[in-house]
Length: 126
Image (cartoon, rainbow, N blue to C red; front, top):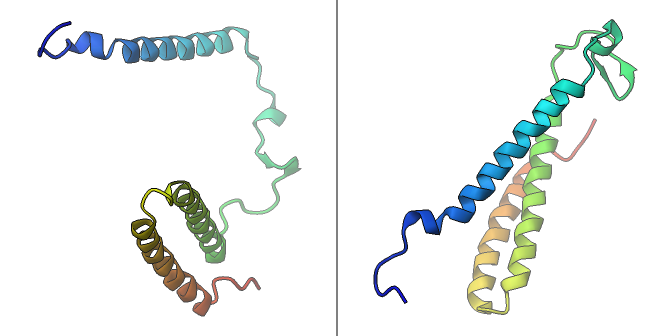
């Protein structure tokens, strides 16, 4: 038994140091193997941009509709809501009243945001 002296920093973080060293070594080794064994010739067809197997047509720098970004943000918002609801359901039994109040505030704020998005027509796709 050591007494009241805290353990040295090296002993405390030795496992983390080993993990970081092994991770960096593995990353370096994989990059080296890829550079040695990877293809060296680049054909013109390889360098052409395409998406989903279809060659690009038209101007690639055209403006994208704002509705695309609004849809993406709404998806992330409600996806995070589900993740928070899952965690809340797991720990609900620990202190039901506190957790219910916190979830009520969370759902209330989300409901206001949902109503605002609905009023602005964010869920309508033309």
